[in-house]
Structures are given as C-alpha cells and as structure tokens.
Length: 420
Ligand SMILES: Cc1cc2nc3c(=O)[nH]c(=O)nc-3n(C[C@H](O)[C@H](O)[C@H](O)COP(=O)(O)OP(=O)(O)OC[C@H]3O[C@@H](n4cnc5c(N)ncnc54)[C@H](O)[C@@H]3O)c2cc1C
Image (cartoon, rainbow, N blue to C red):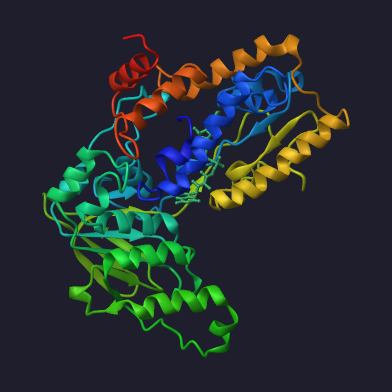
C-alpha cells in the first residue's frame, strides 16, 4: 500500500492527465492542514484513518468511538487469475506485476518495501506476449509493451528509465489479446482502444467481428458503433504481420511452459495456439478483502452501503471501488465521492455524526500518523514528508522521476525538507 493508490501504481504512465487528480488530493490535504478555521479540517481527517486488516486498525479496534466520520476508500487490490493449471508461475503473470513494473512500484510496507525490481520476463525468450482480458488494463499493457521508445521516455511518461531500457533492449514483436466474448461486448473504453490501435498500427482480428454499421443492434449503441469504426479504420493485416491480435470468443485452455528456457506455447479453446510467447499476463479484474468488523458483500467484492453511501449508522461511509466494487474510472469515483461527501455533510448538519472538534485534534493527528506508518514507505511519515517526496520527484524531471529504492525516497524527502 502506498499513498495515492492506483493513481501512482496502476494508471498507465502515458496517462498523465488522469493522474492529475492525485495532485489535487495532496494539495487539498496540505491546504486544509495549513488552514486554521476548521472549515476544511474535515477533509484531512478523512485521510487520517487507517483501517487495519488484522484487527489492529481503527474500525476493528474502535468502530463505535470514532472521533469523526470515517470514509473508506480502500479500493480492491488482489488480482483475479484464471486458475489454468501450469507447472510454475514464471511465465504466467498477473497484469498487476506488469503495471507495477512500468509504474515503479517500490513494494508494500508489509513485505518490507523491497524497492522496484526489473521484470525478468521481459528478457525471457520469445517474441510475443499474450494478454488475457478485455478491460482497460489489458489495453494499457498492450499499448505500453508496443510503444516505441520515443513514446516511453520522459516527458511522455514517468515510466522508470531502467524499465524502458529493458523493453527497448527486448522489444515485443506482437501482443495477442484473448477475449472471452465478442468485439461488441468488450469492457475497455473507446478512448483506450483508439490510443492502443494508434500505437499498434496494424491489427488482426481472428474472427470477422466488425459488424455492419447498419446492423440495427450496432446502430442503436453509439459506443459500439464508434468502437467498430475504430477497428475498421485501422489497417487489418494477416496474423503473422500483426502487432496486435484480438482473439475473440476464445479462452486459454493450457499454458505449455517450456522445460528449458525456450518460449511458451499458449493453447486456446478455439483450437488456435500462440507460439513464441515470452509471457502471458492475466488482466481479469480484482478482488478485495473484508475489513474487520464491517459488512462485506463477497459476491460484489465491496463494502455494502445504503444508497447515500453509509456503511453503518455510526459514521462509517464508503466510496470508490470499496463501495462499488472493482470497476470504474476516476470520473466514476468523482461522482461517487461527491455524493458520499454530501451525505457526510448532511449527517453532520443533522447531528447524526459529528466532526472532530478542536479538542480531538491530537487524536486526528495520531490517526494520520498511523495511516502513513501503515501504508507508506518508512520515510513518508507525515503529510509534509509525503509532499516533500512528491515535490522532489517532480523537480527531478518532467513529469516526475520516480524514486525506486527506500534509500532514494529517504534522500529525496530529507533533501526537500532542507535537512541535507
Ligand atoms: C492498471 C489500472 C489502470 C487504470 N487506469 C486508469 C486510467 O487511465 N484512467 C482512469 O480514470 N482510471 C484508471 N483506472 C481506475 C482507477 O485507478 C480507479 O478507478 C481508482 O484508482 C479507484 O480509486 P479508489 O480510491 O477506490 O482505490 P485505489 O486507487 O486502489 O486506492 C485505495 C487506497 O487504499 C489503500 N488501502 C487499501 N487497503 C487499506 C487499508 N486496509 N487501510 C488503509 N489503506 C488501505 C491503498 O493502499 C490505496 O492507497 C485504472 C485502474 C487500474 C488497476
């Protein structure tokens, strides 16, 4: 766990505009800490709470004695996997391992913040990569793996330079996306598809999926109509010449992993097989863990709320993926968060919950420390150190140069706080 969640570790490095919301959050937190009139104190306190997994957390320990409203925005972080039998896991990754690599993830506090590490599979034998799934994450991976160096180097992205060096030295010939359903039913957005098709340049669709635009079923749905147009406007080439192949109505039936160091063979239920595979990455969504002492809807992978966002009657609320389940983009979260914040404001106005009063400031501050100590790299133990870290990374290069080791994070913080 790390401050800024998927904004830092999930959203693709070439989607800098989507990451801007993280700066807004940090500015709001810092601004509210600076202000002394109490009006924004509420926002800071929401960020203070840490919800422990093993009962040491705020909710598990003291749900009924919260000093103010608690807004859960804990997301959903465990990747779903297909469960296809395989000899070992070296060639079959969760998509998360790939986006952690290209996003410079330094590891979780629980595992000691070991620091960023190269992805050895990038250098494995084989020319192609198989991606399983039809959501935005699948296309992010495909696009990043196929992007030319000029589209990866700063200022185009904040991808760590050792990761770019790895990819440039071991370019991927083609990416195969295995999609369980058809072209009309994919989950990725048209924006993602447009960007990815542009990078790929030449595609192959294993079935004739591009429905006639006059087909009433397609014509009725503007999004599908546009999607089909995007595919039709991209050069269609034979399978062997394609940089991006969509295997529709297909699923992985077996990963034939090599005995030695040779490439992998991926067999599909259609009877097709993809050979020369360097690695496969499964991008099949996420699951979440129940939070102590709180209700949990295992089927929907979320904390159930009432229609206004309340989890309990005593001041616990949920937003984002924690509330809706692991689906939706930043824009969906904004809408969701606005609604829940309004609920909290209304509840406070009606006396249903109370904000922290000045006497509780020390308690609020202790929560903040606790949150950061639980989730952040050890050097990030306050809002000012978080800000110092952020500013140091931005000062090091456009759009930012991500710190990749614990020592670098500590040095960046110290330097920016004027301690060295
Ligand atoms: C690979 C990927 C790429 C994406 N790309 C885009 C994109 O380009 N554009 C877009 O709009 N959306 C994108 N999204 C979706 C977007 O990231 C999510 O909609 C958004 O991050 C969800 O926000 P959240 O606050 O609910 O969860 P998260 O962003 O996951 O934040 C959850 C936070 O809670 C913390 N946490 C978890 N458990 C605990 C606990 N027990 N106690 C305390 N803290 C905890 C985590 O460390 C994390 O900081 C992408 C998602 C993924 C996975």
